[in-house]
Image (cartoon, rainbow, N blue to C red; front, side, top):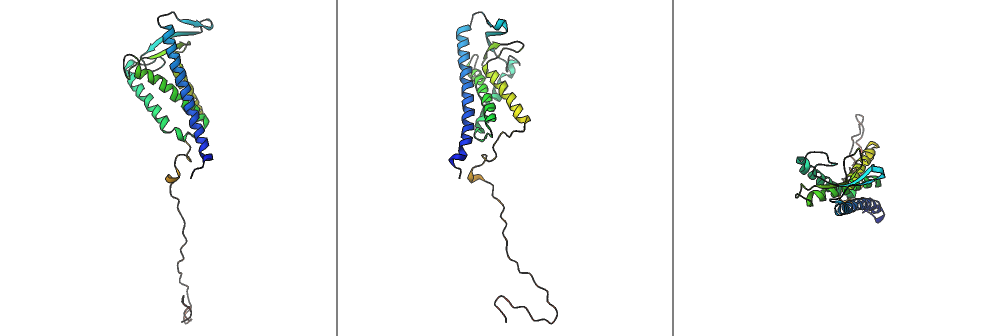
Length: 207
């Protein structure tokens, strides 16, 4: 049976993943709503001497304004599959660093997936709202940034051979594989006798 102390660490990792994903999704959704409400039909806002520009751009393509519209549905399906896979294995994450990386990836995927599902022109083909222009990068949003940061962190963790899943948490007590048990069974072994010698006594004593 698993004790509360043993469950505390996996629960902490799960809480970190959910917390990071929630913060990313909330920040992405709020920023898109604010930009659409305040900057639609207005001149671009230039900051830092023109290095950073805030602009409303509706992107029908795959991501970062890259890709043909025909790929939109495929990338939407990939984003949905990625989110489902992260949720499916979230309780088996091996470390806080993996929880942060997958939380960034999940929050970013959910942020852009919400646009694909609920924005014009329709489900699975909605245009993603991009609003950050920082040359030489294409126009992007907070969800894109989270996906990029999460992917880079995953590459670093993979390069360091950090396991993504906790193998000890992968199975419950009832799912443990049976262990081989060595049982010693006494086997009678014949003892050689010289010709003409008296027979050995049996288990019940001398004849």
